[in-house]
Structure formats: C-alpha cells, structure tokens
Amino acid sequence: MNKVILTSCIDLYSKDENGNRVAHHFGNKNGILDTLKSCIKKYDNFLFVASVEDKPLATDMYASVTFKSFDITLPFKNYQVLDGRTKDHAKELIKNADFIFLCGGHVPTQNKFFHNINLPKLILEAKAPICGGSAGSMNCAKTVYCPPELEGEALDPNFNIFLEGLGLVDFNILPHYNSYFGETLDGKRIIEDITLPDSYKTDIYCISDGGYFVADKNGVTMNGETFVIKNGVTTKLCDDNESKPLIFDKSTTKNNRVL
Image 1 (cartoon, rainbow, N blue to C red):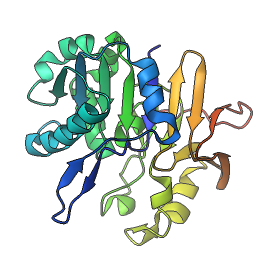
Image 2: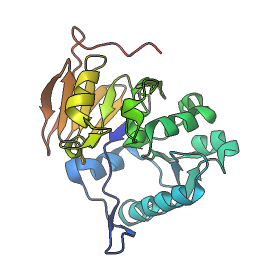
Image 3: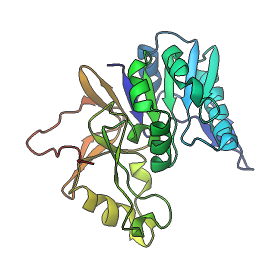
C-alpha cells in the first residue's frame, strides 16, 4: 500500500487585497513538510487531480497556485493536471507520477469525476504517495461520508450522504472541523443539526485545518488536532503538535455503509 496523506488543507496560499491567491511556502505545521519529504522518493512528476472534469479555468487557477507553492517549498521538475482535457491519458499520468495530489472541491462532483475516469481502479497502479486535500481526502475512503455542502442539499431528501470512494482507507473524515462551529446551511447548524445526527450512521473522524492522517500498511497516524464523533458524542483524540496512532475500537466502530 502506498502512503496516503489525508489533509484538511495545506497552507498553499494567502489572498492579497484584491482577493488574488498568492502562493507561499506552506510551512511545516504538525510536521507536514517532514512527512512529505519522508515519503516522496523522486521529484520528477507532480500530478494534480482535479475536483471537476469540465471547468478548466477554475482547475488551472487552483493547480497553478498549488504548483507555485510546491515549487517554493518542495519543487518538482514537471507539473501535470488530470481533468477532462487529459483523462484519456489518466492511466499513463498516474503510473508515471511521483506524487499525486487530489485537490479539494465539492465532494459529489469530484466523486463523479473520479468514477468517470475509473480512478478507483487506476489508482491501484500508482507507485507514488497520494495526498488528499479536503474533498480529495474524503473521497479516499472506501465508503465516503458526504455531508451536504451547497445550498439546498441539506433539505434534499434524495441527497446521498454515502458514496463509493477510492477505497484507499476504511474510515470517514471531516476536514475543516474548526471552521464549522456557528455555521449554518439551509437553516440547519452544520455541527449540531447535520454532523452529530450523521454520527449515528457512521463514525466521523474530524481534523482541523493543519491536521492530517497518514495511512500505510502499518496503520493510521493522526497529526494535529483530531476528534471523533460517534453516536452524537465528540471525543478529542489528538492536539496540535502531537502525533499519535489512530486505534479503531472494533467493538463500537461502525462498518462502512452498504451502498
């Protein structure tokens, strides 16, 4: 199994007074730079996997700032994008990649794109470490917890909160946990009215920005602020500047949902 790094987000850029994204050194919060250095063996080909198939301008904007930040912090020789324009070369791009970055975005939209290019199968041929950001991390699960995000989704009785994912890990995560408190969607409080009730259906492992998981054949490690929500109860598992193994309690951990 390749190493899989599941981040809430990497601090790739800031915004200037005009709202433009300006790439910067992404730092080493909770040891993220050290972690990446330890698992990347070659620095030839960086592959940015988009969150949507058919929005090249948006994809290029996010890819560009990601490439610039890595070029400042951890440079590669070549930077490539996998989206609708290059999907016919997906197998070759993945096989030749030395680092695969699954970007953030709208979870269901990205999930659909992943299946359209047969990524769950193609990713098995990857030799490179795989790093997810936000939605990209969530879609790495075998069965993805997909909470509503856009206006109207929390009220839609047909919105599916469980999707078939890449199958790289077997637990559900919720990124940006620290940013959801006090936030609402469709008149519902995101944590109290959406996330907590969903935790009766699946255990939800939450990471604040700057936190991340590392999964490999030896297990899963938590890095930075991490919580688990089970049956409506929230428990803190790890603090910032800490690294701990994630131990799953098989007596209480729910199995992934059956699709």
